[in-house]
Image (cartoon, rainbow, N blue to C red; front, side, top):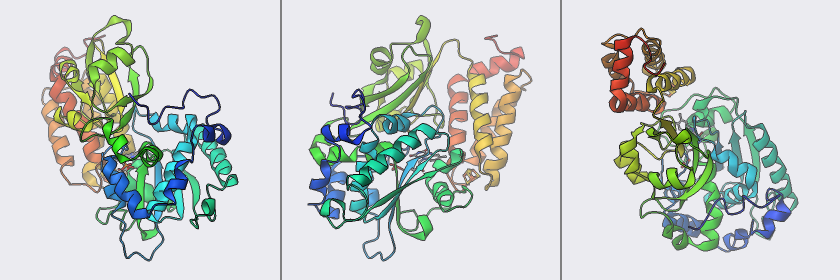
Amino acid sequence: MEYVLTKNWHVPDQRKISVAEKNDAYSSLKKVFGMTPLQIIEEVKASGLRGRGGAGFATGIKWGFIPKDNKKPVYLINNFDESEPGTFKDRMIAEKDPHMIIEGMIIASFAIGAHTAFIYIRGEYHRPWEILEEALKEAYAKGYLGKNILGSGFDLDIFTHRGAGAYICGEETALLSSLEGGRGYPRIKPPFPAIAGAWACPTIVNNVETLSNIPYIINNGAAAFKKIGTEKSAGTKLMSASGHINKPGVYEVEMGLPIRTFLEEHLGGVWKGRKVKGVVPGGSSFAPLTNEEAMRTNLDFESCAAAGTSLGSGGFYVMDDTTCMVRLLQFTTKFYAHESCGQCTPCREGSGWISKIARRIESGNGRERDLNLLEDVCSNVVNGRTICVFADAMAMPVQGFLKKFRHEFEEHIRLGKCPHG
Ligand SMILES: Cc1cc2nc3c(=O)[nH]c(=O)nc-3n(C[C@H](O)[C@H](O)[C@H](O)COP(=O)(O)O)c2cc1C
Ligand code: SF4
């Protein structure tokens, strides 16, 4: 397969601009400034690139939502909050090839008419932030950023903005509130950020991986990108692989790769020769797959959706046959209860309630009616009753674990303890 994102990760010092340039960094810009913004947007649309931040929305279509008659400043925001448990791929792009991110941001900014762009980076990512700051300085020094970039007449400044460690700040409207200096509270949509985003101006929010694909698309053309992957999920996907596997890490795979192949050939199989009990392909906010389901599912948006889960942000983790699913759900719900921003009653109260019930079952004090109660609470927090989809992101794993591994929960309640010891 052709590597789009990781092709230079093995190169020593790739993060230095002099080395990156030898490997084609910023080479797309000459082409870009000879195109019109509309042509770039059309090229990205034709590539079939879909957002890698979790929702999989078509990138070119999103860029096209910036109003044509707009008189306000336009902003690009690179979402580098990366707080989904199990997801750590954006961090690797920044550490291995930061100039690819900056190049993608320059192209995106030119296409949407932004002269100011931000990288919103989670506070805990200190080293990636330092690397990006250094890379930005180098890019300014070489004239790829600042005034009149490469004599094109196009000006762009990129700033980093460090978050303070709230999962909800990865949600695009909470991110905007945080960037503006307020609390990281999500806002009701519509209006979508492309119409009224940062400081009520048109804003495009894209994930780090999404933007890192852009230089390839410009250099090689939409058709070359579309050739990789599946018909509806073009390109490659970075997978953050963790859990009970022999070779955890970040892997670039062609969309459509069977989970079975990924597990056996890339990840070295399940550790200690054990069997798979479950797999979460897309991160903690999605339903798990049983071993049987996982072995007939592929790593692309459609296949994961058809299996009742999501490719999400590619936070792939594997549970072996000794894993206590009740314990895992208890950890997961504790995280979500802690991270709810608290604005909506169903989410604020529901997440705490769900977490308490999960803890009760895990500690051996669960009651038979607790499983129905969990399902009831979940169905009351989802389905558009809240400002943002965080509530859905919390309910989906709960509903998934109960559906797929209900017998384990029942056994816990019946025995009054964990059968795994
Ligand atoms: C609770 C929550 C957390 C999110 N965290 C992130 C994140 O850390 N990084 C990210 O890119 N998108 C995250 N998203 C998705 C963003 O809201 C948004 O859809 C995305 O940044 C758009 O970029 P894309 O179109 O390139 O995928 C999160 C969404 C929700 C609901
Ligand atoms: S759903 Fe939860 S996280 Fe989202 S705005 Fe409401 S309370 Fe906050």
